[in-house]
Image (cartoon, rainbow, N blue to C red):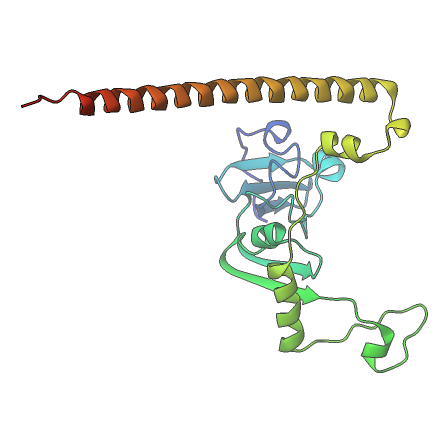
Length: 218
């Protein structure tokens, strides 16, 4: 590269502390004399210059990301590797990161008998599947039920009480008692509301009957 890398007002410590801060960048210039490089963040066009020591200590290439860490990020093209155990939600994230193209590579584990040939004990030999195989895996992903979020409360409630620490058992007992109080309070309120509604209906019926009896005799 002719000349030096132009200075930047953005410091590496502020602009590129982690891969979550600069997940997608383009290297714009490299100075082989001092190993400084200039990088531009793609989504907001911010430019930063990194010296050789910082590059060696803190910067690595991000060739691949998990679907979790790719949430909110956007690239020109993406290539997702999905198995039949992928959830619909993560598959959606993986397949919507690219502006121009999104490609999915579907794979599934096949038993030795399905391969049709003996496999080495030490080596797994992949085989390219057919479009029917890909459609089957895609159907499993789309039709599969995503796991519902599991809270610490539900896990503790399903666990054996004897296996739980005393603070957790005490907390669960207090939580259950509070829930019972709320349910009882709701039942009392509901009963009162229904009683008032019945009283209003009875009063309305009596009023209607009195109105019909107030005729003029000829």
